[in-house]
Amino acid sequence: MSCDWGCHNKLYRDTENGKIAGVCAGIADYFSWSVDAVRIATIIGAFLFTFTTVALYFAAAFFLPRKPKDLYDDKAEEQYWRRYRKSPRETLSTAQYRFRKLERKLNKMEAYITSNRYQLDQELQDLGRKPSSPDISPGH
Image 1 (cartoon, rainbow, N blue to C red):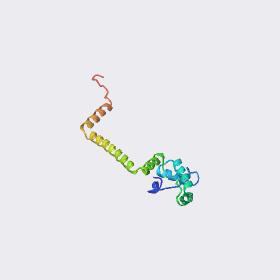
Image 2: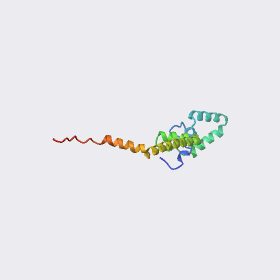
Image 3: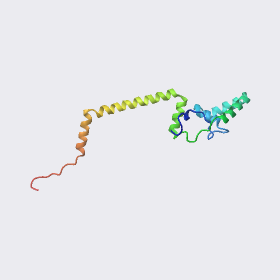
Image 4: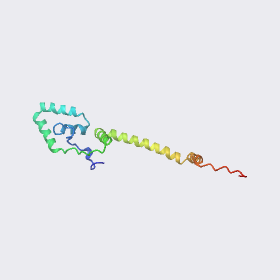
């Protein structure tokens, strides 16, 4: 893990992908929404509720921490945390399914290794590996 426990579930300003202060990009990343949709909603909010929207934007820009550059170790970790934030229940179900699948696989392997068939296969494999002894005939 590239940061302290719980850092992946925090709301950050994403200045790398942001246009002004990274607030819209941070909100989009946190909720797994489209950045363009969040920006359009912010612009509409600015037209309808100018003071409130602008005040909230600048408050978020001031109070939200900047997204750490090493928040994720790789793309796979980033995708995992985005899926988790979007749907924790679905992520848990997927993990449970994968663990059940692995458990079934391990059970099959354990049953095979503890069976007589495994011992027979090992013995046959050992016979195939042993070098044949040279043919020694009497009189040579």
